[in-house]
Length: 322
Image (cartoon, rainbow, N blue to C red; front, side, top):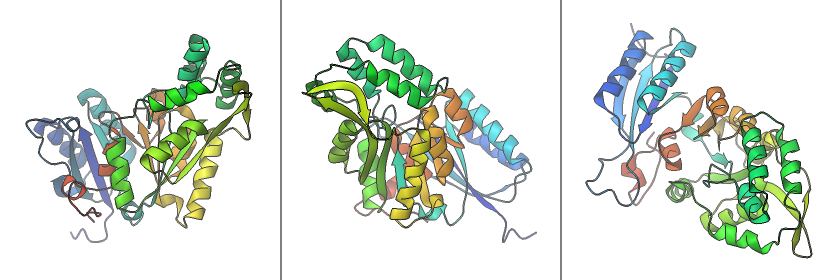
């Protein structure tokens, strides 16, 4: 029977190392769902003997055709295999939107940077333990983000603003950010930071890596000290989703052409709105509710979800493989 006109899917497998056994387990699941495998290709190059420039990573892509017998069961089995084997498995429909992503929006804290800035500020203010407890509860979705935000900012009252510059200069940048941003700009993506954190640090990252937009929360300052209050509307989960839709309109693209990346419960709305929502090293609740996730490698793993090969990424000219 001809497969012309059948649905097409892309299965992307990420990890520090991918074994033949793991590939066999994936192809078995695909076969049991009565899907035909058109191709299996490697998106990453061979791992050098001396991998000093960046941590080792491996990625393969399967192009499959047909209609899964039970897509929910298939994704559930992929999730189980991911958990057991320490790999990430993404299933995307291979349609026109996947081939034309144009806008990517990032959470900042614990996504672009490996810390929560409000926790760093709290340490300097001597209220680190109190603020950390509220932050963790909010990220797990146990309390409302906006309520937790007001509580935490209030505890920062009296902190000298000079500490913000020192914190910004020493932010622990997530693995892969520099490579990811360099490539995204070369292939023409617009990039945005949509953060429940603070504009000061978002703007620092914008200047350093060339983000096009930053939307975050503004801390009120009087006489060079934080007042314990914020200015304007809180950027919570609902506001992030509104901002993504707004930026899509500004850039004249569909939300289906947008990518969203985040780690916390307040990122779930934006992950749901974007055509491709990726939970990055996310809290359990977020990973369970997101359709795509990366937990094994750095942020530049997103490039493989977009279908880019290392042979193009590392060359003089970067272009989509499609």
